[in-house]
Length: 148
Image (cartoon, rainbow, N blue to C red; front, side, top):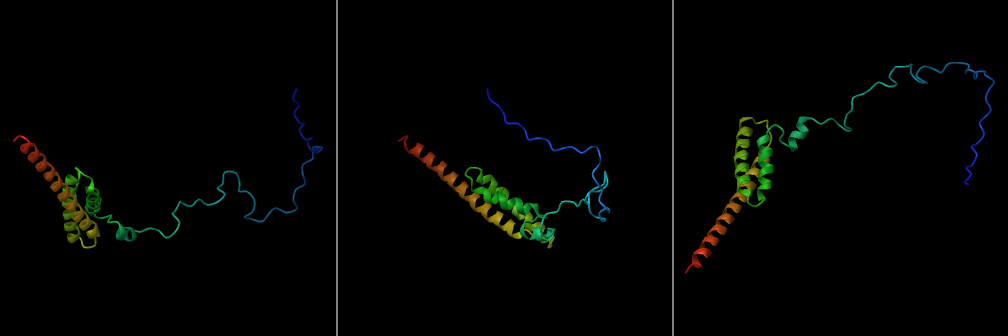
């Protein structure tokens, strides 16, 4: 049979008299607030550091020119075979629209993103189109020459 250790003895209880009160109440600002009151004024959550403005973010990412941003990402992803032809065409079209929008509104950023989208989309789109044409021509010529 396992025996468990005995709990420590309880401290002696007072004979029903309350503990003595402090001589003076604590100064204002110390102690707990009254029931239902907020202990501290609640501040809204903020990111640490200086607040981000549209000027800071707009210098890096063209937030006011979404066609430039789309052209940039679609042009980068145009390196994927087979869908690169379609993505390349889309990147070029969106990049041209973004450049026209930036020319119409000079305060809008995104010319660099648009140019990267146009160049990458055009290069990869033409590359995959040329490779696809070469594969088709090679397969047709090999099937045609084997019939002789």
